[in-house]
Length: 598
Image (cartoon, rainbow, N blue to C red; front, side):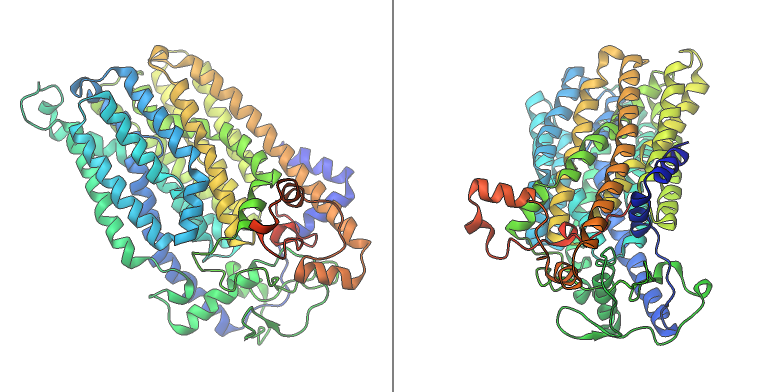
């Protein structure tokens, strides 16, 4: 239904359809040589086998620690964590809320610091410390101790996800990225399942410790905290030696692979620009030439991910010349580098705030059930041990659906339509959970599986859209940090799923259903706004001379069309000295030649 509605609108708006075709899948007529295909395949495979799994492991431990939703406290609570520690049940919600207050507020700051000092140093250092704080939960015996630890972890965790995602996007082209992000983000759901299984193993292995009075012996929840905190510290220390600062310093690539890894990202990042006919050879930032394809090959013989790395198919009779402005950093895979303009441009971009609003609404179910699913399942009539074990199938359903949708998104080369379908699955699961009888335990549990199946799709594909439509690495990092404010969904979920609504949580389910419906409409509106923007830019460029279009494409200094938010804010606050020279030039997606992907 969603696709048919949009199709009807596009039939009514021909100029918007033209913009959509420019932003849609690329039809490549010229292909890479056989040697280039093998080189690209070998380079990507090394990233897939060495870099991606380790980053996924970091995020798995991050999610297992529940630094962003305090999940291990939810599991520990089923083993009487608050009672044994001398805490009130409401203290759990207070601790989670305090954590998110700091964790969410400092997201852009954490992202900026990570980009400033480099992910390869920043993330392992922070992980080592928060792993220690996780282990220190063993000795919590007062409310202030729990809240203090959660606040410290929240500060250290701020920016972890946007920094690591920004780092990951440095090494993959736009339409390789969603599948990798799906594997990366899927660890969030895997951790939900693994956390339940781990809790089941610990609580089953030490059942006598769950209700033993204070006698000097460790409780099962203490062992749980020790395992999760200790494993985080060990892996974080390895990260100092494993993660490269750029493709040029990747220890697992040879010289030829390093050069290719750098060149392919540089070329891919300018593929969304409308340009004039290109010449036979292109030059990268340092003036060295990257060879064109030596021979044409049938499309069916070329791997999908290798298509369009160095050459672009015709768009309205023209090829897309992949060339960046001099304002862009020389190395597009370097994990450091941030300018004042990057910060200002990110904070004045309306698109990030629109997506932030709808992303918060769509993320409430994922955040809520990552913390409180053990308690919700326990409310269906299961004991604490089996309640933790039964959280695994819903989370694994979410993993499978996420991986399928990210693969489909890259295949289709579109983000927003898959997001809408994911939200439709989420709405179906939420509706069934709300409407089914309270005593239909099996059906309600099945509905929870459907619900979790759809709730992990929107957030990662929103991030994939952001990374694919912001060529400037510095701005991209800050935008992802602002998008990190979407973790406010965790704060709302902590306040929503209060103990007073247990065990059925009917009211929280109804509120969550309403939020997801609003989010669904919001993503539809956002897609139409992008189509309008692309069409408006195409109409503007049609009025410019060839020289003006080329100047805009290369330097971002074409004829001024309208005052940008960055320019208005800079002049209003008198930020010329802070921003520096060259601020009149448009960069990245601000250029009128840039066409937003959908």
